Amino acid sequence: MYSHLSDSQKEILNYDAGCVVVKACPGSGKTYSVAARMSKLLAQKKFRHKGIAALSFTNVACEEIADKLIVDFDVKQKIGYPHFLGTLDSFINQYIFMPYGHLVMGCKQRPELVGEPYSTWSINRYERDPHQYFDKTTFDLNDNLIMIAPHQAFHFKWIYLNKSGEINGNIQNIINSKNDLFKVGYANQSDANYIALKILQKYPLVAQNIANQFEYFIIDEAQDTNDIQMGIIDALNNSGAGNFMLIGDRDQSIFEWNNARPELFDEKYNQWGKIELNENRRSSENICRFINFLSSFDRIKAVTKSIATYDYVPSIVGYKPEKKKRGTQNWIVTPEESKSSFDKIMCLFCATCEENGIEINKDNVAILYRGQSKSQFLGVQRDKFEFSSNPWLPNNYHVKDIVKGKHLYENGEFKEGYRLLEKGIIEAINKPKNNTFYCTNSFIQLLIDNNGIKEHRDNLFELIELMPTTKKKTLNEWINETNTLFSKFKIKFQIEIDNGNIQIDELFGNNMNHGDVHPFYFGTVHSAKGKTFEAVLLLLGKKAGMNYVNMLSRDFSTLKPAYQEELRIVYVGMTRPRKVLMLAVPEDDVNEWKTKLN
Image (tube, rainbow, N blue to C red; front, side, top):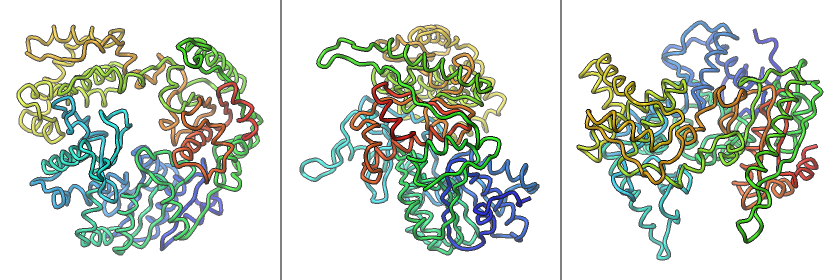
């Protein structure tokens, strides 16, 4: 069962006790190795009241581990008590935040998680209501309020201290608002992690109790941990949890917007035992050599025989970026000309796929880009409406949930569409009577308990089916039609009509990754992290502040953290394909890219 593992993978398989960090290159089979180690522990040890906690950062990664346990290692037992297989956040919620959060928050009842991924946050009573920023902020290790949303989401410039050394009034208002909402029992996921660390610090017996419940901790994608999460790991380790395995690739840490700090992974790598996985089972040797300049590994070896010797050499092609004459509004290269030049590259890429026998579908082929601004080349323009020209009115954010939910539902994303519609409709009914009303999951459950699940859903579907289609309609058109149909229920939807003359398909276009738009997968590099394709076209532009070619010419260690992350994002995009990799860059940057990567 384990004979085909590499020597390094067998080190993971046979690692028994203590703390170790596994540094893994792209495509090295780290998830497979995690499943192998779990399967051996489950087979050889008798777990009665003390189990294995296998944690990752996404549900998809956890499902992949569970699948490999069954398919590859014939583990027939369900991974339940005394074990835990799930996300790091869900572990923190289940064992720390939910049972003990009230001790720190000052609420009288069990706390409730709000904001994404649990529900959209919609309390916004007036234009500059600090409550609206509850899901966009949290606290750091030093109890300072920090942003977890782009700066454009705030109505003020984020400068923490004013000239007198006092906290900026806008920020202080948000701090006060968050503390008030904590007392109600609300917390976003980042808040839950912060509060969980406070619990472990204030009540060390909680940490000791968790340490006594789990013999082994295995944490995948550990390069994405932030200060708070690593603080929780340290608290458990210091309280008796002595067997930790952290697995990750610091070169793929691309979530600093969520305060992830890859240097925390590096620190543990230097402090604890070390295992290195430098064999790439995904990509060809040509791709491995091409990406080596951006890797912290001395060398990444391609080892899958059917792929390693694939002869396609990664290519770099140039397109014309849009450009205005300096100091004027006159175009030198229009947006249409720029898109046309990229269309030619896209045709070349698709032809290359066909020449290499790669069927163009969403599993095999991807066009990835850095940031939503390049989505316009794929016919998606959602990004420019996100913060400017906002059509959503204060205390009416439920309207966005309803329109987006209907759009998703019509495009086959039934579960997420229903979730948004359910919450939005309940708020539309209740907000006119109470402008601070927020539809929580517990409120939905209360309705179901009182009315029964059938009546609850029948009532919702009566309204959902009455709504007109969102296809080929502007937001204003859809709102007007819906208000006419809903007038008998005395429900009225309101938006900023001056900003509502936009196609709904365009407004929520980022959610349209289906065959009607393009036959291949398209999206940001972040959206494709962890995915594998046969062929990838990576679209890059020029960065404000420091262009990519300037970053490439500097020593990586001397770059600012934000620029280091930019290059890691490029690296993640380039490590997705097995056979074909093509980079599309501004035409005057082509030679610099070729010099560095060829």
